[in-house]
Image (cartoon, rainbow, N blue to C red):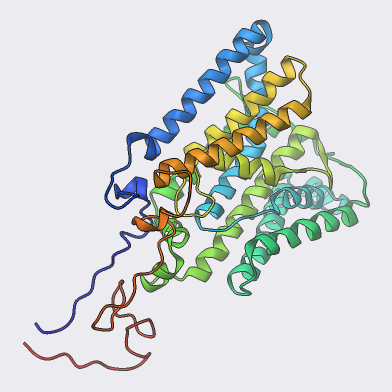
Length: 394
């Protein structure tokens, strides 16, 4: 047949350098630690080292079962937020509004009107309210970013300020007390000794892992974050998918708000302060590239546990929060440097685009006028929309 056949050169949608086995530097294959298993193993080792340090410096208190459960409870809320943040960052975006959305969701779900409806019907009304508020705010973020073409950093920064201000207006700068005892009893309880909040975190993490690794939505998330233009040429509706990523982040903020309401028995405009920084730090520590296209849910969970364990060790040893902040900053910088080293073979992101993973620009048009990814109607090298092409018969 004399027709021209084209193939994609960017790899399968969603394939990252570590996953596809592609050499990140001109044919040189990455080592074991550059893959997701190797990176997660490194995080497990780091967490184990922290646990050993805690057991040595505070042997009586750190290894106590109640202390372990305390760490897990604290990790549960920010962990749920980090799951949503993982999807957004893998998709090539960023969400600075997560902390404010947690506050807004908690305030809206604890207003007198909402709690009155919960008393008349069921406490599930408070849960649905928090989820709806989070999803709605995430939808606004997604529409502004995907269809309004506003930079994600600016759009979510504006939402951070607006959502926090709206929460203050609704609550009149007061802390709202949760009155529904059934709500508190359910979320403050435990199952076989495991706190309900920890179980919710585990369920969200498992659901996130399945969604990211076993569904078309997850594969498209990797593709959009790795190379949005190539994803568009492959037939993915990039704008719509980006919008849904921010909706997903908003839903996780609503879940976190419910968990925080149960843990503190309050709804407040001060909830979720600096959650955006904690979530981004945990996701980065977990191995997710800030430029998108690569990341794991397991890594993000381990990143959350590392930070919470570190904070617990500092608290048990009566060290200042300032020293803890310094240590956290150092860890973040080291994590980013290691990411660049594993991804590119050097401490620079300049070589990342040479492989088949995240950050690759679309391949240039060939001599026959077709772009990698096939002849797409309306796309580079493809026929105009609605045009017909005549192929020579064989």
